[in-house]
Amino acid sequence: MASIYKRGPYQWQALIRRKGFETQAKVFNTKAEAENWSATIEAEMVRGVFVSRKEAENTTLSDALDRYLLEVSSKKKGVYQESRRIETLKRHKLSKRFLASIQGKDIAEYRDERLNSVSQASVRLELALLSHLFNTAIREWGMSGILNPVAQIRLPKKATNRDRRLLPGEEERILIACDEYGGDLPYVVRLALATGMRRGELASLTWDNIDLKKRTATLPETKNGEKRIVPLSQEAVRILGDLPRRFDGMVFGFMDSHSITTAFIRSVSRARSTYEKECAEKGTKPNPVFLVDLTFHDLRHEATSRFFELGLDTPFVKKITGHKTYQMLDRYTHLRAEDIAEKLDQLAKKLNSKK
Image (tube, rainbow, N blue to C red; front, side):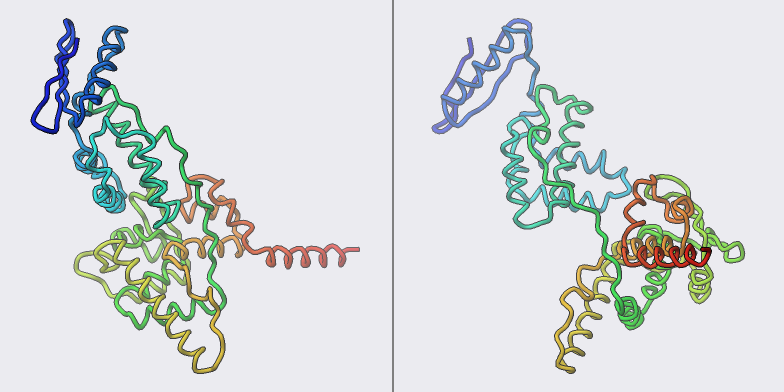
């Protein structure tokens, strides 16, 4: 039989001593909570299904997030992005709760609250982190007796793949703004459009891995964890040839890939402002989507689409871009219906000429 003691004016402590089991103790705000907890634990002991939740009951989500960052996130390539998500989670009131007390309804409440301020994709990533944290705590940290509450809720819908292409005139204005920004940004943007390389791949490029004679750039380790050799077009070789050599051996001088993003966003914003000013001077209404909702990753999307438009087959494009599966490239083959229509007309003309 559990013993329940009043602990101070506002708390109650439940204490369970049972032969064959480690002593279980927990403090509650009300006597009713202490009695309910005791009844549950004793019933599990009688049925032989009791598993101690002591560690999970004494570890807050905030503490678990700190441990996760140190032991798990730090070993990932996306440690910076994940560390930002962890900071977001730690600022939420949920982080003060003990792991054993967090239920599916609490995660659902967090999900709905976050959806009011960030995208579905961002919430899915935060929930994926939480889910992996709970699984790690259960399987590797020995926090038995708890369930993964994220597995009990409905996740936000998966975002559709972006298909943002550069509109006519956008590339020219972006490049002008990048030239005005200065530094290595103009070269990074032009090389991204010429090669389809990812932001992180561009930031980590070294001259030791570039052979301008063979026209190749070797990426020792990519996002997929595999080595890739990127063929360089004449335009890519020209861009690299115009770059001054750095003493540290790096091709570009950005501290990290996030610095590239910051510089790019500022340049696009500047290009949009210039465009709006010109429209105001001409008395015309600006296009509401021109130079809007552009990310640096859209340059990779644009480059990949152009490879297909040049007539390259999927295996060749996959080799250049490093996409892991052919399915990932499916969406690039039907982006511009007008181009397909033009090719159909050309094919029809050829067939008619043979008749």
